[in-house]
Length: 101
Image 1: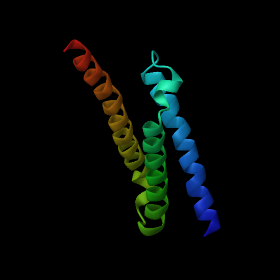
Image 2: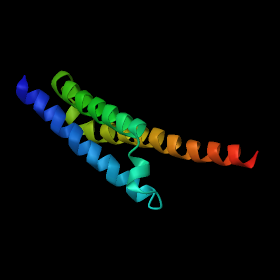
Image 3: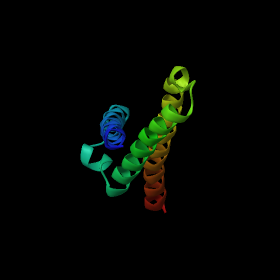
Image 4: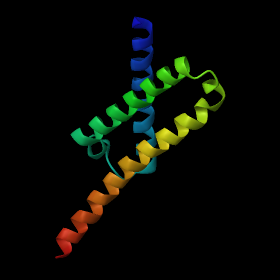
């Protein structure tokens, strides 16, 4: 059981780092400090933990999970990144609208 938990936590840490690198590559004009707000860190942590836990659970329950695991991981990862990007762009548009009025 401890090995499974450590595997999930290690995967979550790796995914967190990967998501952070991808976000920095997507938004090169933003400083890392702007990307690492409390809310973004919380969203990235929850998304990474959910993705890692889902991978561990599906691997033990579903026999045919291995062949399609990459597609599932990419789809969930894309959803997490899309939500985070929507949050960043939504915040910018809202600030510009508020300044214009």
